[in-house]
Image 1 (cartoon, rainbow, N blue to C red):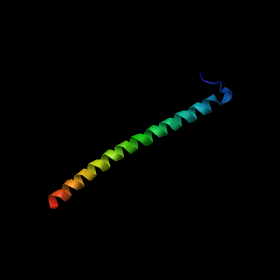
Image 2: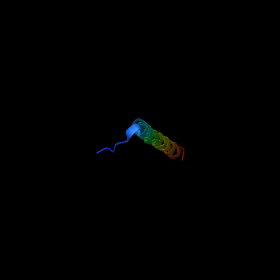
Image 3: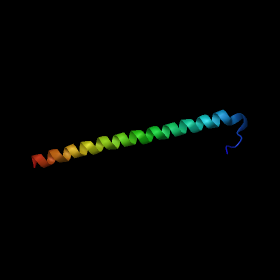
Image 4: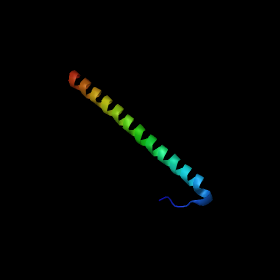
Length: 52
């Protein structure tokens, strides 16, 4: 299924691995940041409601 990459196989596959790793890290960081921002927004809204 995989094409023959010849002498460039290591470079190509390592580039794919690095790219996939970076994409996974970016998605993970984005999800964690979104949770943090959502939690902070909820806390701020509760504070505003209490203070009128």
